[in-house]
Image (cartoon, rainbow, N blue to C red; front, top):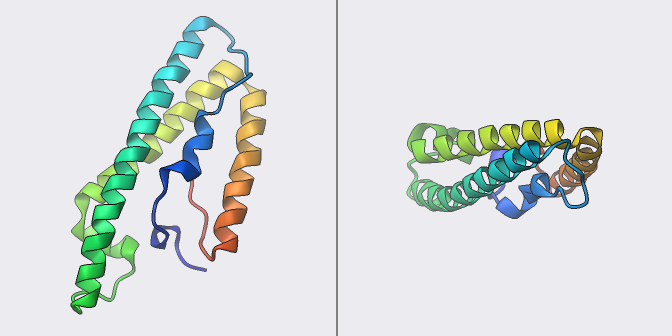
Amino acid sequence: MQPASERPFQASRFAYLTNTDGLAASHPGAQQQVENAKSHYTSALKNLESTDKDAREAYHDDKANGLTTDTFGNWAMQNSPEWASAKAEAQAAGAALSSAAMNAFGPAYEQRIREKQSEVDRAAYEAGFQPEIF
């Protein structure tokens, strides 16, 4: 089983956190907080996807030239501070979205996300990777 960081990042795998269709917010202010958090999360995922692509190209160049034997995750932490920063930002934005949505929608959101996270985890395992949470 490979570490999650060895799998190229795809924002679409984690977009399910933004799915609040059909859920009723506890109050209008909560709905607006969720919408703001969704926007920030989506932007952070797109930034990470772009940064991940660039970092992987540099990593593969270093590997091909014999400059590293590290896994991508280890290499990126040392050689691509932009990647590490983008990953941390996406994780923080995901946590903020989850918190806002739990506050707004309660157990209905939690159940929806738990089911989808299970699907994402299963797909990661089937592909030979440890799952990752954003």
